[in-house]
Amino acid sequence: MHELTKTAPSPRPELYVATEGEFMGWQTWIRDSFENHIGPFWHRLEADGAVRCAFRVEKKHLNGSGNVHGGCFMAFADYCLFAIGRNALQGRGVTVNFGCEFLDAGHEGELIECTGEVTRAGGSLIFLRGQMMAAERLLFTFSGTIKRAKWKSPPQPNA
Image 1 (spheres, rainbow, N blue to C red):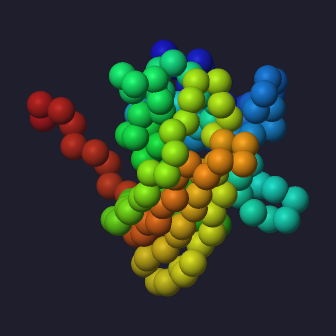
Image 2 (cartoon, rainbow, N blue to C red):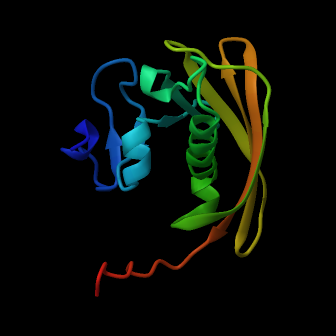
């Protein structure tokens, strides 16, 4: 079991707030098994109201060349879409469009940070964009669209 799924000291059971370490005070969602497996990814609200997301690159995030795997960048960007757009979303949603540009490599030990913005929030669709940095290096830019969704219970396996 992933360490973050053991407890969730929050009134929202899907949200975990770190109480120690490098990301003390930052939040992460624990309802997503895939993100729990490859993360943890973190987000927090800045003083100016902007959302900042981050993760520390570990060996598990690297590809065969020793750089952050492109799929890791894309998964983190998808996490960031929902963190950046959560006030506009006000509930659950699904990613319906995603585009990205790989600009530089990330390396083990680096802190990868992401900022972004909601460019438009309509009745059912939210449009966003963001960028990832390691210190002053721009690594990755992305844009995406989230569709507000009514959540159904998943089908039971072998039912």
